[in-house]
Amino acid sequence: MFITIEASWILFFIFSGLVIFGFYCWRRPVLASAIILLLAPSYLIKIYHWPITLLELFLLVFFVVWAIKKAKETDGFGIFFRSVVDLFGTGFLVAVFLIIFGTLLSTFLSTDWRVGAGILKAWILEPIIFSLILADIIKSRWELEWLVFALCLSATFVAAASLVYRINGWLTFDGRLAGWYLSPNHLAMFLAPGLILAGWGLFVAEKKNQKITWAIAVLFLILALSFTFSYGAWAAILAAMAFVVLSVNKNIERGKNGILLFCLGLGVLFLAIGAWQVGDEKWVNLLAADRSSWQSRLMIWQSTYKILESHWLFGIGPGLFQSYYLDYQKFFPIPYLEWAVPQPHNLFLAWWLAGGILGLAGFLILLVTYFKNFILTKQKQLLQILLAAAFVYLLVHGLVDTPYWKNDLALVFWSIVFLSYKAARRCD
Image (cartoon, rainbow, N blue to C red; front, side, top):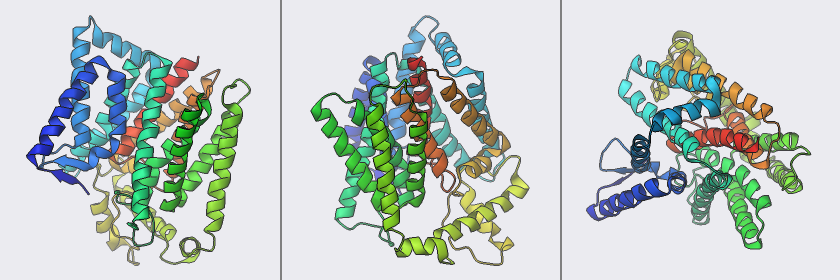
C-alpha cells in the first residue's frame, strides 16, 4: 500500500528537502543518518511511478555524498575497507557476502528477476550499505547514542500516530491496531525494538525533563503494542527482557538497577495483558479453533517445506512466495486457511526461500558471529546489551513471523547489527 505523489508543489518541497539533506550529509553525516532512521516509514511514499521510494531517495543522496567525500580523501576507500575488516572480522564479512551473493543468484534464477532485483536493492543492499557507512562515520560515544535515540524516536512517532488510528476506531476487521501498515504484526515488529532500546534512554537520562520524555515514549510504545494484540511480539519482548536480565552483570553500574526494574515491569505488564486475553475470543481461537492463526501458520509452513523440497538449493527468489504458495495448494487436500501470504511467517524459512542455501548459510553465520562478538566483549555496557536484546527480539519473533522483509524492518535490522558492533568496540 503506497502513497503516490504527483502534485508539482509537493515535489518541489521534496527535492528542496533533498538538497538541504545533502548539505547535512556533507557537514553533519551522523545527523543525516539519524534523519534517515527517522524517515524509515517513508518507504510507503512513491513519486509518480518511479521504481524508488522517498526513503530510497534520501538513502541515495546519503550514499553519493559520502562516496564523494571519501574520494576526496587520500586513500579514503582503502582506509574505510580496512576499518570495516578490523571492526567486524572476516566471519561477519563472509556472512554478508553469502547473503548478497545467495540472494543475487536466487534472483537471477527465479521466474521473475525484476521483482527479486527490486527487493535485493531495497531490502538488502541499501540497508547493508547504509549500516556500513554508519560504522565509518560514528567516531564517538555520543554519536552512537544519537542514532539509537533516532531509532527510538522513529518508533515513538509511529506509535503516537497509530494511537490516533486507535482513538478514531480505524482498526482491522478483528479490532486490532495496524496504523497505516498492512497488518498489526508489521506495526508491532517496527515498534518493539524501539521499546526495548527506550529502556536504555529511560535509565541513563540525568535530567528530569529527559526522564519524563523517555517515559512518555515508553508509554506510547507500550500502548500501541498492546493494541496490536500481536502475541508473537509480546512473547518475543518477554524473551528479550529475559536476555537482558541474564546479561546484566556486576560490571554494569550506571542504570543497572533501573534496567532490571524496567525488564521486570515490562515482563509483568505483557504477562498481565496476555493473562487478561486468556478468555478472549482471539486467544481461545488461537488454541482451539480449526481456523486459528496458529493453524494457518502450520499450513503455511507445510506448504513452505513442500516448496523447498524442489527448491532447496537456490530458493525461489525474493518476493515470489505468494505465487508459489498459491500454486502449491494442489498438493494439499484441505484448502488453505489464509490466501494472502506474502511471506512464510518464519524468518529462517524466508531467508532460505529468498536466498537459497547460500543466503540461509550467510544468515546463520551472521547470527553466530554476532553472538560470538557479544560474548567475547569483556566489559559489556547497558547500551550494547539492549541492542543485543533488540536483536534477540527479532530472532524470537522471527520464529512465527518475518521481521525483516520490508524496507523499514530491514533498515532497523541492519542498523541494530552494526550499532551493536560499534557499541562493543566502544565498550572495550
